[in-house]
Length: 419
Image 1: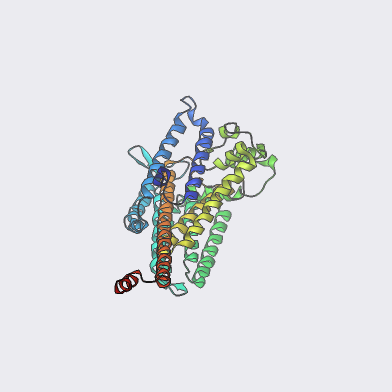
Image 2: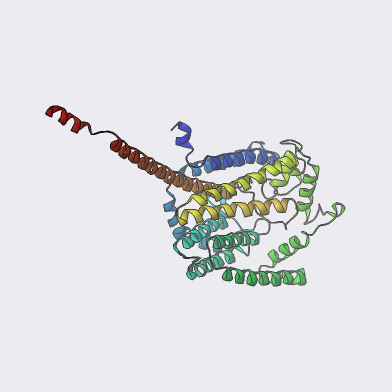
């Protein structure tokens, strides 16, 4: 085993995808965050991002050396802590109209990211211990729905999109975990009906009335984002008012070609709010073209496909549900970020995993990658054991056949003595 195998343990394809996404992140964040360095050194924004990425790499190396069985204990402490922090963050100062960050000794982090991790790990654990026959035990649905409802309701007031994406991931995990389809269908009908009623409430209620009720400021924001998500002619894009993000993102995409304008040559990054985070995919397309945008999308698809291959090789349920949950979380968040950037979904605050600028999301996503690599190490070790066992059986069979075919040398020697 060479030095590379000693350092980069686990599935090499996962490592390759991780390195590719980090490389794209360094290039595009450096370009997209240029306006943050106005009046300062242009190295400050990227140096901060590179520092968090370096910490993320350390997290990956540490995590992927931990046996996956120890991940089962994480939700026991992380979930209660996350619930407390989700309550605390509601009283924090608002950023862009929402309270999502807690400042801890000068470092900002999002409790919702911790809650997402806790719920994915908890769901994987519940599904793994409740498998019985063709379906999971009924208690699995009750436990998961109870936990997910509490977490999502606490996230919902300040981060509607995160709550929806988390619940969607948990729902897909239950589908993979063989929870009864009847219960899942009932959940879709109930939540779908509730969502339709909520959207009608937002549409029919005047802004002045919404502003007077609790969470009214968020209701008005959601109402505007939904109303501006409809297709409009390019000449009618609002690039000065509340629809500026979507307008400038569309201009960025329109300026691109097959190969783009080249790294660092974006124009809309100076006008597009959150160009280095929520709308970084639009900057990627502007600079790297349709080819670059397709390659980024292909990396996430490749990651999900590779996780699916690893899941099929798992001979235990917990590691399988764990990496499937992480893969679904990556895929749904990446998909929604890209849909927002190209105008196929309402504007939300979802970063592009492992690419967007942001310390909390970078750290948590690196933990996810480390967990996937840890499971892949277990799968490789089990396959090696099976290979060695099969090799031993073959060698034993060959030895027995050789004993039968060859004469007994000891008996021949005795016969010679008799002669």
